[in-house]
Each structure stands twice: as C-alpha cells, then as structure tokens.
Image (cartoon, rainbow, N blue to C red; front, side):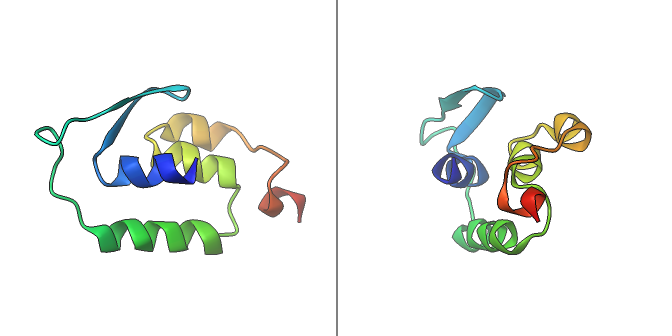
Length: 78
C-alpha cells in the first residue's frame, strides 16, 4: 500500500475507486518532486491519526476518510 501511495503522489498512478487503479504513461505524468513524496511518507510514519484515514485521504477519498476509523492500526490501538 505504501508503494501505491508513492506512485500516486508522484503522478504515476490514478485511483478509480479504493480498490482499483490505473498506472499512467510517462507522457501523462506531471513533473513530480521526489522530496514531496519523502515528506508525505515521513508525515505518515510520525502521525497520530488513523493510518487507514490517512491512506484514504492521500488517494483522494477525503469524504470516506472523515467518516471512518479502522480501529486496527497502531494509532487506533493506543
């Protein structure tokens, strides 16, 4: 899932829905900044938020992320 998040953050992957995605061709890819992807990953690792909420929000499903909490990740278990 982390690899998919990195691909999405660099414009190499488009989400159709939470379970389906499409890889983009090099011609379709916007210029990306590797350091932004690293910063996002550090934010994910050090956050106190539900990991599932963060992943949903990162992939563009903000409405779903606001209404649920997994109850299973390390942050929800604390």
